[in-house]
Amino acid sequence: MGELVRVEIDEAVATIRLDRPPMNALSAAVQDEIAAAAAQVSADPAIRAVVLYGGPKVFAAGADVKEMSALGYAEMSGAGSRRLQDTFTAVARIGKPVIAAIAGYALGGGLELALCADFRVLGESAKVGQPEILLGIIPGAGGTQRLPRLIGPARAKDLIFSGRFVAADEALALGLADKVVPDAEVYDAACALAATYAAGPAIALRAAKEAIDQGLEVDLDSGLEIERLHFAGLFATEDARAGMRSFLENGPGKATFSGS
Image (tube, rainbow, N blue to C red; front, side, top):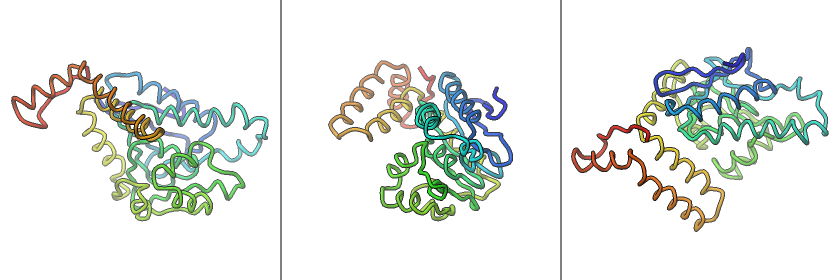
């Protein structure tokens, strides 16, 4: 277990918990521990869904600016920027449903981390944004790529060009948030959503996530081929047999899946 990032497991749902008070600044050490946590939850077959959480006061207020300000082009053009992107890519490639539970601020790298989740649950007073432009730089952990894919290029450019903070209600309207709940209910709401997916067929869920995510990066014909291969492969799983058998015998929605 890391000192700054913990993995907490409750039945089939794991929480990747950032714990670097007061603002969960994403230092190099935090980045390394996030990558290790992503690898841990990815490899554990008993974990069926994941929640990203920074605690009840803040999700993550972005990069460690003090640490970053000491770096020059030589450092950031190599290992520095590569570590940052590789960390977030590891989270994005967790082959299980991932929900970001956002209380307080998710800014800069904090929002970029949340963009790696499949869904985002925000508290009513949450604020999100990409304020890197105010530092004279741009998002470097996927914000210029994942944000426009989620909300469209013009809306993403507005947030990135201005660096402005977005309240929860606007985030919901933009499609940046999937659900807004009272602040005190953020974590429980995210865990409840994760639990609904954790009961599903793990291999099929991974296949669906990979087909969607990979398909968004290619042309339609290539995406359809990705889908076809995943679809056919699932007929080798016990979950597919169990699901279809249950449907024929009991009707839809009553199957119990083993994850095999």
